[in-house]
Amino acid sequence: MIKHPVDDKTAQWFIDHDFHDRGMMKWHGFMLSDHKASFESQRHLVAMTPLPQQSTQLIKDLIAQLISKHQGAIIQVNYLNNNQPVELRGLIKGVQSGELFIKTRNGIESFELDAIRNIRIASNE
View 1 (cartoon, rainbow, N blue to C red):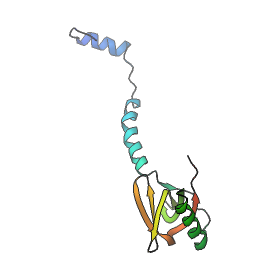
View 2: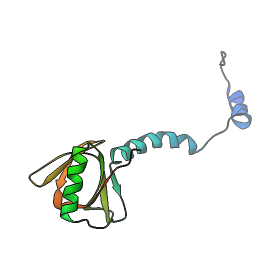
View 3: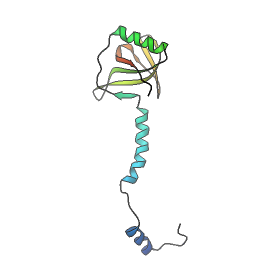
View 4: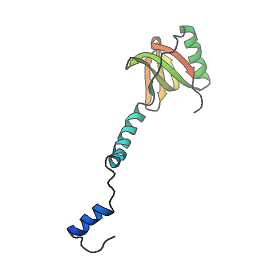
């Protein structure tokens, strides 16, 4: 740390010889944290390639299995995000009046059972 005042000539010499300006690199750290927070808030919503439409009976059977065994689920619904179906990942909390409730990283989400395109067991990641 410099303990004496710095004149313009010394400052210019430092900039010309010792200082390395990282340009835009210094801004990436600021933007990264904001972008990461934004992406994390949407992480449970993942746009994917459409999977085959499962039968209503298979979907109901898988939901019952996932609830009884407290297993995580990956559910692809027919809602679109940039023209792609959306996947939700989480723990199914229950079904009531034709509506499924799933706990994701962002809280409880709900949607109609008829909107489910495909459901599968989440691997332990």
